[in-house]
Length: 225
Ligand code: SAH
Image (cartoon, rainbow, N blue to C red; front, side, top):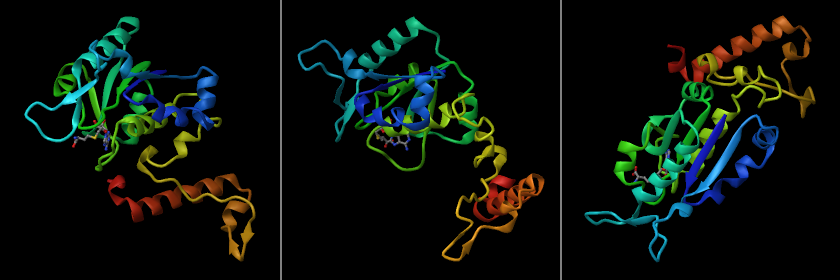
């Protein structure tokens, strides 16, 4: 899978892709992530502009359509994209189900907004999907794009060491994950439940499933409906 992320400040996103699981996935060529600087497509005037004041007035700059169009057009000339996603607080709320579906795609573009956002015509004519990471507003689409990319890429086969591991995480099967423990079995008198020390795999699986259901009922009952 390949993700091209278009941003006015691509450096903001270096770190998430340069460490740990995602770094390994990229190094091993399981996935590729391209950070594209929108400024490379700035309009050819003296200021090398990518943004301008909003028509009609009001505070805040708006990313212009021309640089974004030039950038997306160039990418599309090189390969076929399954989705062109705009990160936006008024987009569809990101869920594990959306991540599962997106992880099956081959090439996607993610566009990060900045300042007040992007010219509405970008959204009308160039974007195929709009995603929000939650009901709050961030300064730019870079952190949302990194969140989306991480959530998708860890589902690509081979990215996680233990391939079953993503399946036992929260929200798969509409359940929250059960509690986990590691050494020592007792710390300051705080005990690990006997069952997880028993070595009896079937009983442990059963206990974990029960814990998942109990935790979901308590914390997120709407998931069980
Ligand atoms: N004026 C816009 C917010 C702009 S915030 C509004 O009120 O809806 C600047 C950029 O940050 C947005 O263009 C978007 O790309 C990104 N962004 C901010 N919050 C986000 C969220 N919750 N989910 C996804 N992207 C978000």
